[in-house]
View 1 (tube, one colour):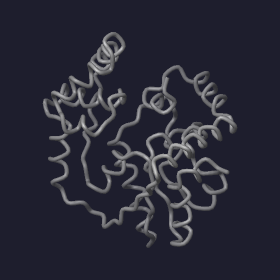
View 2 (tube, rainbow, N blue to C red):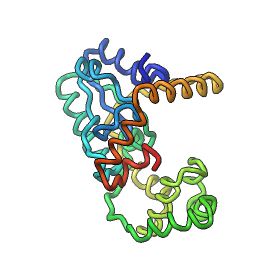
View 3 (cartoon, helix red, strand yellow):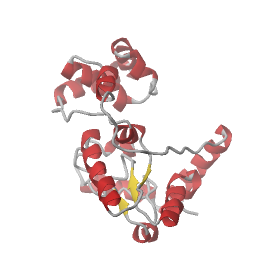
View 4 (spheres, helix red, strand yellow):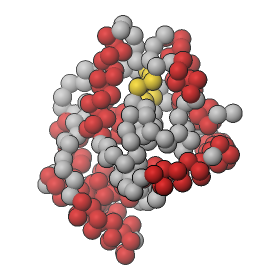
Length: 236
C-alpha cells in the first residue's frame, strides 16, 4: 500500500482528476522539494506520469522558498490549466498555501532578517519554546491561537512579521483579503475519527521507514550543507 493512500487526499485528487480529465496543482509546502519523496508522501511515479502534476519537485532542498513565491507560481499553473479548458484540482497539504490562493491573501516577499531569526531560535533553546509562544501571543493572539505551541517555525514567523513591518500577521491578512478572489472554487475536506486517524498516521510512518525514509534523509543531509526551508520537513 502506498503512503498517500492512507490519508486519502492525494489519492482522492488523483481519481477526481482522472474523471475530470484534468491536472493537479499541489498545495503542499514540502512536496515542492526535489529528492524528498518518501518523507513528503509524494504520489507514485506512475501517477505523476499519468496525470500532470504542478508544484511538485520544482525547488532544490538548499533553496529558500516562501508563500509569496508559491502563490505566484501556483497561480500561473492554475491559469495554464484553465486556458486548456479544464478545471484544476488543488490538493494539499499546507493550509497557508491553500488560503493564499482561494482567499487571495497577499504575502510580501520581504528580506529575511537572519540575525533576528537566529536570536529567536537561540532564545527558544535557552528558555524554551513556550517563551517565544507567549511573546507571539502578546503581539498577535488571534494568529497564535491557530498554531501549536510546539510549532517553532510559525511562532517565529509571527514575531518576524511584526518586527519587520510593525503590523501583525492578522492585520496583514485582513488587509489582503479585502481584494476580490478571482477563482470560483469548491472546497472539500476529509475527516476521520481521531483514533482511526492516529492509527493511519502510525501506519504511514511504518511504511515510510520500510520504503527507505532514513536513507532518503541521510542522502539529503550528506548532499546539502544548508536546508533553510526544507529542514522544516525533516525536522533537523
